[in-house]
Length: 306
Image 1 (cartoon, rainbow, N blue to C red):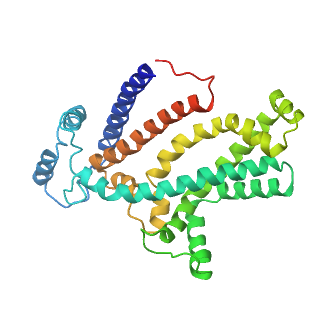
Image 2 (cartoon, rainbow, N blue to C red):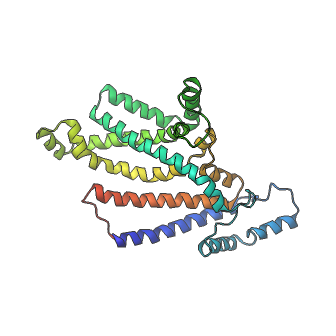
């Protein structure tokens, strides 16, 4: 286990290094640059480029950024946010995205497994058809449509949930459901299909022959094996929802990391964009590692080797 953890740790550092380096090079390679929209003389522009260490060849700009990042543990300042440091901006935005993402993750994971389990238990019944039809609709309709629709119906028409603010659990419900709904549908379909596949195995027929009813056989024997593909999907899903969605954040006016990605791209702000990429990539690497470790607890046949 220790050898596996060390190997994954160093390989993750290599992955993060290349992802951040490529992001920096692609951002700085765009035409125009972060100062193109500002009206200034060539001398003033050159002075600003020296100030932010964006002068010289691209490889030299990358080398200086890497030195600052690796040796000084400094993600530099944002060009378009009044010289606030990238760390300060992420510290302001990240808590909102993590709170929203955690709620959406729980809704998607718990609700998706429950829907999938019930659909598999009532295979080919109206319950199964209704659940899968709902899942198909949740996957097909984009969040920029479901968000305003939920605001109009649940917030304005029925008045069940508040449509503004952020902090209380009531205010979190609408954006969390909107963000988690498509993932809930994917998890439900994946759980159902995986359970149906496991139910056709010989050991499941043996369990039923011993007198176990369908629900008990599914809970005791099938779910633990069928959940493995679901766990695989939950890893990258967790990284995505925890860093937020700029569509959901825009619809519900939430200040989170999702908009940091958009602003970094639109403003050609390489330091801000790289900071957001570091957060997302680190979460993705961590949750993929967590998935691998979780496998060993769910299936004793799986061993981790260095």
